[in-house]
Image (cartoon, rainbow, N blue to C red; front, top):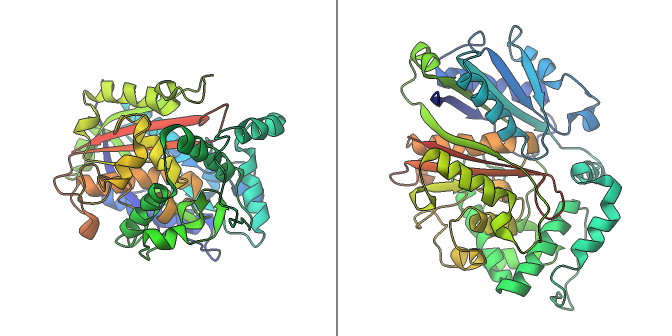
Length: 410
């Protein structure tokens, strides 16, 4: 197979930034990524633009990428718009990798941007309700409600405030894990506290304050057992990645390029909820490890889709970083902290770095590349050689509707 490289990465600060436009954030990320790769706006032969919410929030129902990238100076670059729920960013990245691997052009650009801040929070959360089969919403909710039967919140627990339907999905899965594998609220809080600690060292993160396990446990409950710090926030931001093949790399003269060892898209299937060996991420990661000629033990660090703290626990199991059912134990052991055996979400993850959905997958790539280059500063993973990213989106049946596993190597 033709080798593929990441030559340049960039991202804006993530957070609530209602004063910034999609054009503005896209321009910042693209300009910096092109500079990082040592090229200009005329170099990429194709651009892939990931965005999920601009049509409903701003009314830009089509050609969002062409509009945003024209403003960023890419007036003569063909653009493909990509929507794959919260996995849109990695979908754009995979398309860019496929493009240069096929030698259609030697350099391609993947961009993700979202402006999700809106005065009406209920409108924002209603946008995410379209991430599952809207024709079967009641049946899905009823089926999820049966998960974790017998695991009930303490009598004093009260929930409140607007929330995404996906918080209810994750909460149902977490309760079932508590029922079948002994997951505890404290283990969930350990994940969130760890990610807030990591984000405190990330200047681009949305939340940079450290939190203790007790503070996480004492926060407002969103959907029991998930408290607010265990859940990804509404975010604005952009990220961009320049990829190339060997000919493109020679043209750019990039000396800090990172190799793309695998980027696999998972496909959903009907299965029993408890059959995690058939989970979409499990199957995608098995193929990614095979493509890369590596295994879970070779991974130096991972960025996983922690839309909630339980999401991180589930994905560490599906990625083979621990046995099925042992994700809570792994987190509780400290192994997933910076300095541990397998640091996870050293960027702060979706929970703390932020989650502008179309940009999230590319922000994961940004973190891995920064780590593999040895340029992560206080949050640097020593001797990082292999980085893995898992990015999921939407919901279908009992798992994500889309999932991608990417492995990068220095």
